[in-house]
Image 1 (cartoon, rainbow, N blue to C red):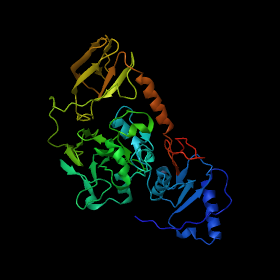
Image 2: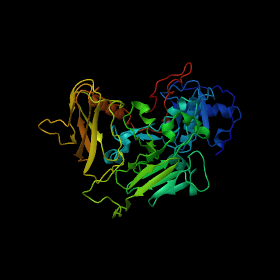
Image 3: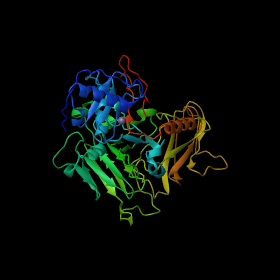
Image 4: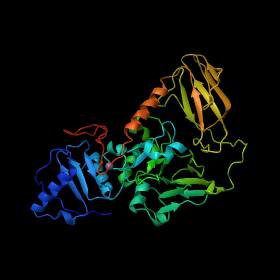
Length: 448
Ligand SMILES: [Zn+2]
């Protein structure tokens, strides 16, 4: 896509002095017209002013003609300055934001995705200029549009899109590099929604991804919300709760060798290396499951996968508290149709004595018993068959770190504060870390 246009010199008019975007653009167009320009003959207008007097630094109309920037493009060498403008142009082209599906400690659950709008990290996708672009901000880069947004734009069509209807191993071309016969996105349809699988490499505009190996030795998966007019994708986070805020999304992609099964148990996706993606389809229609569904009552071997490491998680387990740990939909375990899993619980080199009790979610034993006891300096491991009900395990623990309950509560409060529906025009976030320039505000959540 090529844009051509006209840049006016600085035009001086009567600005409203308050956050009134319509008046501001009306005044700007009037001044431009008085100087011999014809604003109505342009498909898009970018109005750049020293101060919008609004909470956000940029506003755009979704599918509309106007973009408002505060001190935009102040430095073309600065990724953030370019990203804001590119982002607003994305709105002009009809794009909504690239979200993150925020399901707390889970990548995705049936209830969470069924009400995605209430579990929406509005700008969650770190790898999309329509998301938070923060990975690019620190590298003076404007991130690529994600595959779903390119589908929305009509930029990915024909052989560049593969609608998966059969199990097999699919080759994905890097999203940044169109190839004649290899698709750049896999679309997996379940009975209720669609998932989009893409593969990123440090190519062209995404060259900065060389600094983010988790983004390139993996696939990025998003899901849509078919019940909303908001066509923005919801990125899935395959290491949920690994950090707070947007930092949680830097390690979101599904690493090569890990597997993801959708909550409807329609498919399992396992990225290999270099864009090879193994897909197993279990369900070809809403009518029933095809052959290949695991027979009931049997254990199926899996490559061991770590589902929780309290040494690295953002919110360790504290004394007397408990922690729900998802064991379905992770590590190759299907998201549904599972009645039991085998777990190992390990305590390496504890500094103090303690104990761990593991039980299925919702069935806390009335008589306290421990599954694992340890003393300082020992290394204890325990293996057990843990029935899982409702797809979760509850894991209370002894003397370890800080409390997860508080952490989860804080997270929910923060989510609620973001649940407000964004009206058009859409505002955009302030500068990312380290990218304020003199006179520019650094507040992170400037948005409406
Ligand atoms: Zn926006």
